[in-house]
Image (cartoon, rainbow, N blue to C red; front, side):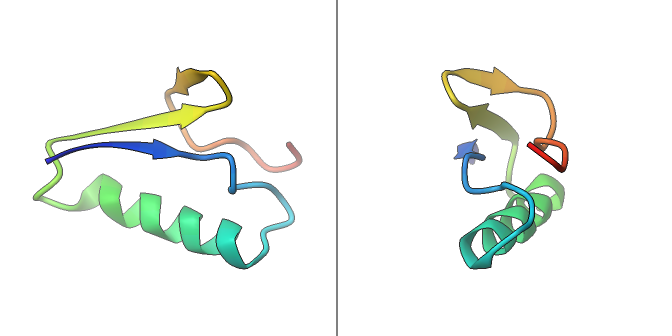
Length: 54
């Protein structure tokens, strides 16, 4: 399975949906069933989860 994951909810300090999104993307990244995981933030693809303080 290939997934594009929008990371906009992952903003610090983390709230409910931000925490949920962060944990979900971390687990998707290591799931065997996922052959490709792309992160999308704003208007472009990114290589890693947005850093804190954004």
